[in-house]
Length: 396
Image (cartoon, rainbow, N blue to C red; front, top):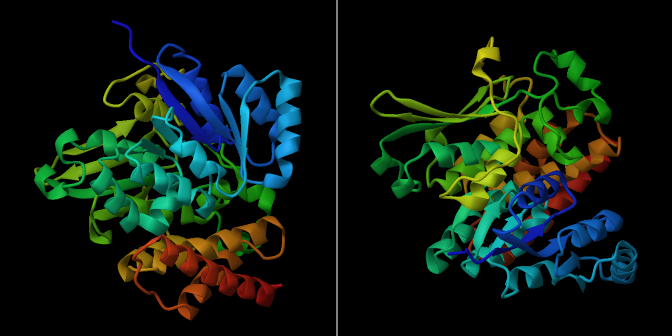
């Protein structure tokens, strides 16, 4: 008997995760149908994607560019309907045809539509780690109430998801888990000394040795903040605390994460550094589908290295652990300050090592408070951004 195609909406379709998701989807035309695709600046690409995948809706949050998107869609030969404006992303999630949401918008901008998907009980494929970082309690509450399946797409969290038993992914005690171990590539400056880090340029920071990612995520990887955010995300996804999470530097990016059990077993998920693997896993879970990824040849794996991260040279990781321990709004402040600092670095307003300084100063200036609802999160986020922008101006 034929399977009814699963309706999927991709938030952030023109980014690297979105493009990889569409590559997996095109391999399974009978299994999935594209409902809505959202983009930000590259309207031509968004229009082409809508035509190629027969999307029903093209989504953009900037209302002033709605006519530009319509023109691009017409030029591309797409009949997609335009959803535009501040609430357009949430509208795409709320569409009755949308069964699954790929949340791949980088930064806090992706929070509201991802949370709405969880509230509605949709299948949420979470590639936007910042959403869980700044609103973890809200996602936990929403999924418990609606029964939404939240499946992580970040390679590290997806690896943990795969290495944990299906029946107790959020009860590590029942699973006999001692520790969750996240691996980090170490970024492009793993071997650089402190003096070299002061002079790092945006182009150098964006040149990741293993992964093809956007600029913001590449800089986060270079500072190890990406791993810090992943630590906080893991705590909320798997209902645990900082004492049960460890980070190791693994330059080859072949082992994506590990789970250590109390009987001495350590289960690792391995694969080529290609985001199509976790994307395909999340799309089809609990089944497995073809992803198009090159197969791992163990006979060619001459060396797999593991090191303890150096939080003296890369203090962002330690700042993230501290924010997780502090709880409340500390993670909101951490994330907001990081986004402001990274943007300033990419615009060559501040130096590479100013990023952790700006984040630390912002955390010290803004006392953590409770997070009860989305309004709290947004208020803390706005306040932290103002403080971080003041820190940037002080550094210029």
